[in-house]
Amino acid sequence: MQHNRRTWQSMDEVLKAAEQGDSAAQTYMGICFQTAQGMQQDYAEAVRWFRRAADQNDPAAQCYLGFCYQTGSGVPQEFGQAAKWFREAAEQGDPAAQFNLGVLYETGQGVAQNYAEAVKWYHAAAEQGEPQAQFNLGVFYETGQVVPQDHEEAVKWYRRSAEQECAPAQCNLGLCYETGRGVAQNVREAVKWFCRAARQGDKTAQHNLGVYYASLEAAEKATAEGAATETEGDTAVSQ
Image 1 (cartoon, rainbow, N blue to C red):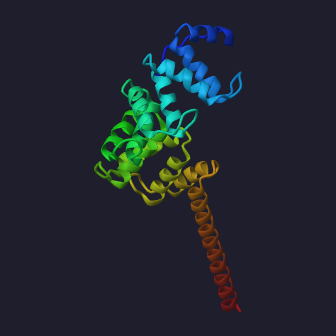
Image 2 (cartoon, rainbow, N blue to C red):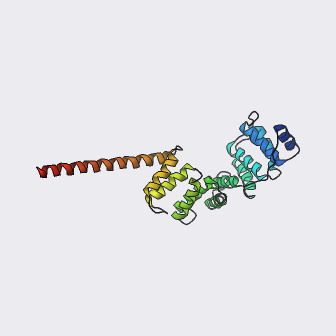
């Protein structure tokens, strides 16, 4: 979700705006303290600024504050509070918050476990291009949990996520091509996506590539041995 954000020429300008109640400046101050951008890292101070902006209904700040509660950064870990702030932002259309709220519903952290709600929020985030949500949504469609099993729909979401370099989605898309689930079987495409995922360190993709190349090597060896046997047979006959 895009927000109208001001630009400032210096940190002094940001701080002045934040102290005067500008929620965008307050959110930026929180980010700077959280990431040690231009100042010493201080999670508690980050939370203070996120909270000031979140109390003004700033969705980005609400999402950041939810993340702080989810991870216990600057505040005690409290999934109920994380869910509260993620929901505030998600209902305003923030895709990161929608994804994170979906995760809480899927895992049952801070809210009662509810896969249907998880899918609802994943779908909302996925439609806005959030790659992790697209991947998770693909998994639900592939397994047929909560939603009707639909391999073509799974492939659609895996592809959207994979094109944004989400390694697990690239691996799963490769598996779909390898097995012909939801897409025409195409080993070359499978290997392409396994390679892209493997380069990012995806262990499953690396394993699948190893199996593919081992089978290819075995096939080439068998072909070579067969050709050699035929040659020997032809030689014996000509003698």
